Image (cartoon, rainbow, N blue to C red; front, side, top):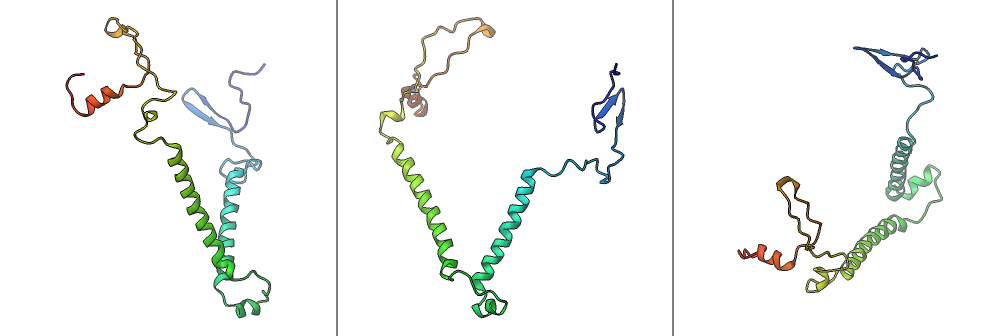
Length: 164
């Protein structure tokens, strides 16, 4: 039978009364308590590889776009795309983003009712205040159900009409 203070893992830290007992791995060579089985998270690796890839691709693009052709030929690079694409691709990307944003804003304007429409005040999700009697003693009073505030009450509050 196991003792009540048994540990499942040699890495677990036990708290026995006021002192802390730490079980270290004798094969640990890092000094930080990390096992060889446990490494960096895959998302960290993908982020690191992705950032390095972006930097390398940017440097290659800038070299291809700005270095004269005779320099590229002198180091043995003879096959590369036309310089037209050095300007065309970024321009196409920027124009696509701007048109996408314009299209998105236009769709939002088309799907929004006009300010004079009754649909801006009432729709299928509107709820009128119920006529439930919420009487009770101070702390025992029930919470009123959630509902929309009537537009006449809003107008009265906004324009400081004292007769509510």
